Image 1: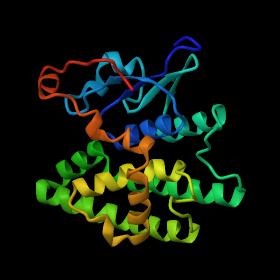
Image 2: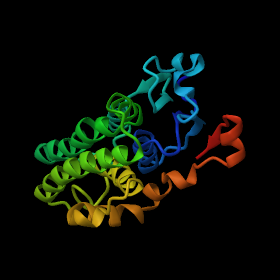
Image 3: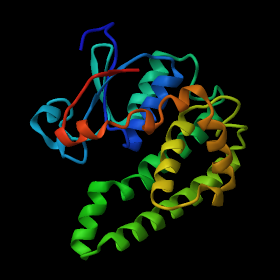
Image 4: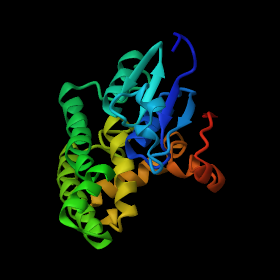
Length: 230
């Protein structure tokens, strides 16, 4: 972690919190290296990664001689240290709206759909795959319906808060990606779907899509970690 060195992102290709930070780095035009941490293999709980992040959570970002954790804190740091192009609007009221959308996803929707949390709930309730899917669909639907109202009130076009993507979009795109994985159709939330449609064709956001970082089957099976350039 030396100042001026290339940022290093510890992530997992399908982690929505990691996806948020990849979008933010890409929007800021920052080149970075990746060190994948295999969540399915439990690598986040291993001694090596715990030395990086004692919480055992992803993502972590080494940048400017610092080691940062928590996706929103990382995005705010990028905004404060590299203000152009901005992730937050100039108007205070609009910044509050952007943060409200972001926090609604990060604090309300995501925690209840975190794989570790859901696995424990299913264990205690003796629920199987059907119960897990029902839980995920219910919690995501309730949360995203609330976000739909927030985004509609914000009135941005074509992105959540205006003509350029920002903090709210960094969180919204990964959450809708997750919603599709669990069988939900984002078209039921017209405003969110319209924002997503604008986002996915934006070059910087497209560059952060999980499919670009999906490891080869050989690497998954061997637990191999590689450092890739973005």
